[in-house]
Length: 207
Image (cartoon, rainbow, N blue to C red; front, side):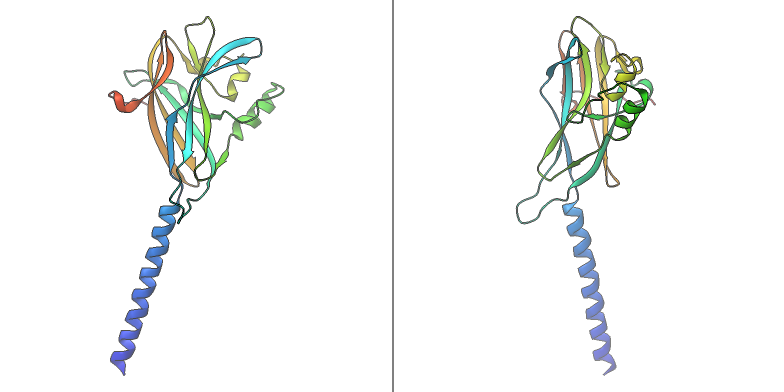
């Protein structure tokens, strides 16, 4: 009788452990998976100025139809710019701006700060959102990290001013406590473009 009870409890324990393990594994499989890819550059008008904007496509990769990926809630990003020697441009990381978010109608400090602090996006599985990286105005050699804060700096934030040359950008996306990171090269020469880091060696970053 005692042996039967022991076997029964052992089976229940094993079943419980397997059930919990399966649940944890399923939730891990269904958790958001953010991928980064280079978006086509966009020629835009910012007020009276003509400019080219570089951006990335941030995608929540989907699963086969049997299992659905979870929504990537409250996605927000930060961008760091570095020289090829690994030195950071600016004193702090730049709060990223989702390209599809509304631009500030009025450029009061309060409204701009509101938009900066509310730069969040929910990304459904299989869907994507563009994220702005940098802007270069027509007829200028330098480019700038581009986010909503630029409206406080006459559309040119000197903290993220990039002279003619090549730079490394480090992008970090956070969603529901999960962090996704990627690096790209930013080319600001005759051509103004982003390149995938996989084709070049990334130097050591110095913070």
